[in-house]
Length: 253
Image 1 (spheres, rainbow, N blue to C red):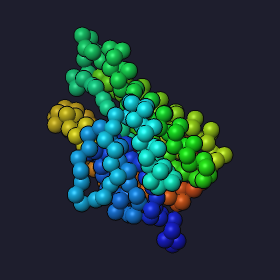
Image 2 (cartoon, one colour; image 1 turned 120 degrees about the vertical axis):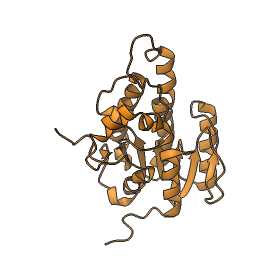
Image 3 (cartoon, rainbow, N blue to C red; image 1 turned 45 degrees about the horizontal axis):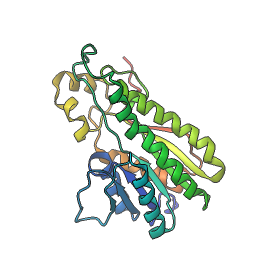
Image 4 (cartoon, helix red, strand yellow; image 1 turned 60 degrees about the horizontal axis):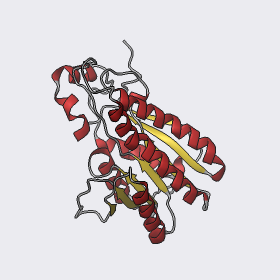
């Protein structure tokens, strides 16, 4: 096998929402495989084990994002990979729609601002940088919520479904510049964001029964698929979805 196929050594890689959970695991995995990793998150803690290049900023603040990208380009001269992982959610564990704030427009706007608009703006800026070298990979982290309807979390579902479609739109627009843009759709991954569901016996049982592999995913389960999409191993893949859900979507009766 050609050892260069899965090579990401010295790839300048931005990972958003990388202060914890999936984002931190992806950042750590890329660092271990030799990438130059830039973490962007509003809540970052200095990591003594890995020499990340950290930018503690709010992705909703476009001026700060522009300053951040300018600093990255000045330091590295290029951007090879962007992983849009940052995400927020507000949901009702009891699936009660009435008398809740779930359909409050404020919740929708706040969720879209992080999950969709930040990724939209950042991807647009990064694609322009990547186009100069005619090479690059953008990976958007979506969700099962982009594939199926769930109760009690409309804003999150709208944001992730929109992000999925944004990927396909951008892939069409930037493919001529050899910039590949793909989705990774995680299933139920055990992270701080999903702990409420994991600790709720009824919800956990409901989710467990749908998993072919009979376990919740771990953040490290996303590292391999991200390396695949970032590397030349996936050089003919764009506008696609990779489902990493333990078989949740595929399970029948």
